[in-house]
Image 1 (cartoon, one colour):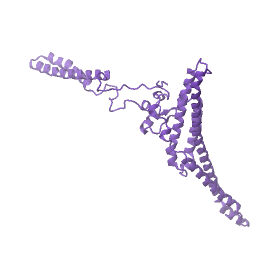
Image 2 (cartoon, rainbow, N blue to C red):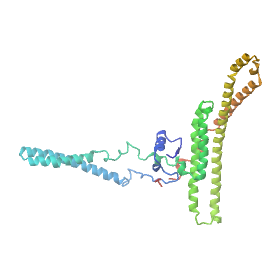
Image 3 (cartoon, rainbow, N blue to C red):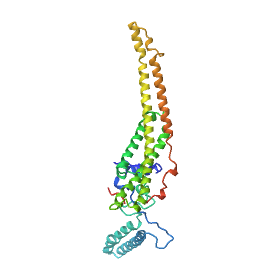
Image 4 (cartoon, rainbow, N blue to C red):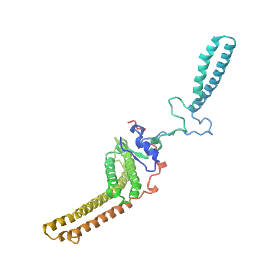
Length: 336
């Protein structure tokens, strides 16, 4: 199943629905969305025709059910009183079935095989409701965008897998809170760039791009594109820098632990030296090797500190730095 990147501000149930949805149920980032009709009950004729037809059908079926039931009862009584079994059979096999079928049609709150009416289900699924607040990198990003996204994802996974992060030596809670926002901001910007880059070749096909009027429009657009690329590269660079520092902290801690474990073997070798008749002060904690061990410990602590500082520099982007949802272009539904 292709990877999907969602806006962290989407409710958790909707994010889960998006993650489990098949690709055919998702909309491409640049696809248009057909808005459902807005019904204003105060304006005559502004009701949905299908709703009116259904209500009329149900009302007619209800009257038919009641009428058929009454006829079935009356005809059965008349047949019994007049000793005419054919009237009773007609009531049982004609009017009673009509009453049952009409009641099923008139008193069901939804049609057989159809989902319940609004009020027990959402009118729009998460793929439509949160369109342009999720990105499928494999489908929504062009080649250059996919390369940049793989870099961001690799850095994020490296951060999450870091031993210093997992053990809480670096502020794990803060990293877990801000990392999804940085990934979403990167994915969203790459998707926006890919939408424009997909349309440009079609728009410019057969057109002289050196034309002054074309350049007057195309030039600023390319400048904005370059600024967006630089912004994304800076965001990815921060993630990669933090991932590198976390890796250095892990390496320093591992070296520190290895040296400590090696030093823990000293008593065994000291005992061996005593039995061989040699002095045991060659492995003393005051020797050169011990000084190196202490230096490694300091370096490990310093590496963790620098990684922690880099992690704290990853803050949740302010709302003003994010594009307003209402100003975005409305989203062709993806068929495959």
